[in-house]
Length: 99
Image (cartoon, rainbow, N blue to C red):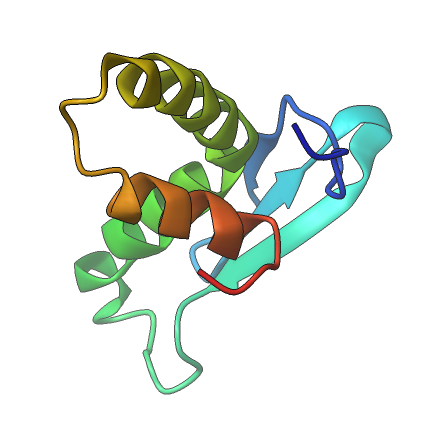
């Protein structure tokens, strides 16, 4: 397996306000900020706030998802009955390699 090139998990989400959710790694290291588009006003923000929160949760889960996918890759590849192209491509993209 390749060396981890990202901030190790766990990553957590903090909702700063209705516009921004922040994703933090260990030691309060800022990983990402997920924002609602600036054209959205407070009056219609309720429509996009759940999308912003879901995107932040997905980003925060990335280290665990990558780890789980790598474990699944080992088991499924050893079985030999599964097309590994999608799994291998997703892992390569997450690691910054060409699929």
